[in-house]
Each structure stands twice: as C-alpha cells, then as structure tokens.
Amino acid sequence: MRDVAIDLIRIGALVGGLLALTLIIGLAIGRSTWRGRGRPRQWARQQGWKYSWFAERWRPVARRLTWLGGHLGPAVSGTFDGWPVTAFRVRPRSSSVDTKHYVVVAVTVPVPLPELRLRPRTWAASLFGSLDGPEVRTGVPTFDDQYLLQAHDHAAVRALVRPPLTEQLSQVAPMPILMSGHWVITWTAARDMPAAIDQLLPTATLVAQQFTTAAERQS
Image 1: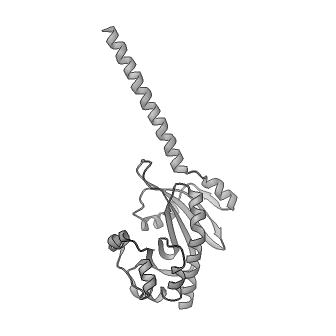
Image 2: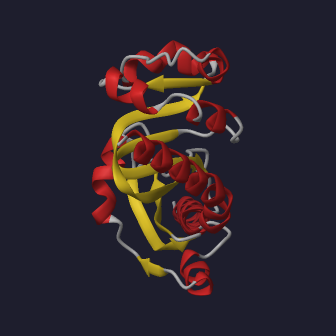
Image 3: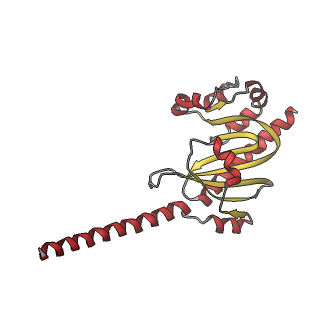
C-alpha cells in the first residue's frame, strides 16, 4: 500500500508539474500575441502620438465591425500628413493562438460622408456580401469589377462614388473601407500593431483625402 501511495504522489506531482508548465507557456503566448512583436506605447512615443490602454471611446466604431468581435485593446492617436488618426487593436475573445487579431485605423475627415462599406471583390465577398447590406453598382465597369460597394442610401453613395473618384480608388491597393459620418475606417488581420499601422496609414489617409475632395466637390 505504501508503494502504491508513493506512486500516486509521484504521478500527482508529475501531472501538477505538467499543468503548471502548460499554464506558464499559455500565459507567455497570450502575452506575446496580445502585445505583438511591436510595442504600441513605444511606437506612439516615437511618433509623438498619444497612447491609451483603453479604446472604449471607439466602441461605436467597433460595433460597426461586429464580425471582428473580441475585446478592444490599446489605442494610439495622432496625425499623419495632417490627418487626425486613431488606431486600436481588437483582441479575439478566444485564447487560441490561431484566432485572428485585428488592427483598426480610423481617419477623421472634416466633412460628413454617407455610410458605406467598400471592399475588394472576391468570391467570398460576393457570396456573403448581402449580409452587410445591398450592393450599389456605380456603372463604372472597372470599378464595379474590382470593388464590392454596399450602402443603404443608394442615391447618396452614387452621387459621391463616381468619376474621377472611381478611377482614383481603382489605382489604390485594394483594402476594406467603412465610412460613417466623419470617419474613414480600415483594418487588417495582424498581431504586430505598429507594423500594421505603418502599413495602413498611407493608403487610409489617401482614401480619406479622395473621399473628402469628392464630397467637397459635390457640395
């Protein structure tokens, strides 16, 4: 009996050690994936931007991106080429390392814009796009073949998204765009927040400029 008890103690100690090791590894992975390879606070300091841990102010934007899900992470805000910008991370609710993390960049524009969603046209977007609203065709074949444009106010969007804006957008690297009020928003799946911001900023602000110019020309 004594030998059996000793064996049970050894097995218990081994199992406990394995569980502790698994927990430590899980915490390390979680910390790494949450922060990403880059450090948002350090990046913000280098850019002269403001860093804040909570992105609650941007929850209305996150609600528009419900398919991203998860928790709002740190936010950084500043200017890029004269445009006010805020970027934040959306961390998935799942702790799986395979679950995607997203970085969202929101550019503030001086004129109100109609609400719309613009994304590269793919078979998946065409198949499931109806879930995000009715499609709007601009009548410009090259643009309509490249992008899936969705909005509820077809008249307002058609009045805005027309030449020369359609030609300008066709020359930009395709990226998902959500417009709402004074925001032009884009996002990408990424764990490295600073690298994702650096990747998105030039195109996001260019698209904001193009939409702003078109809206000012229209008014």
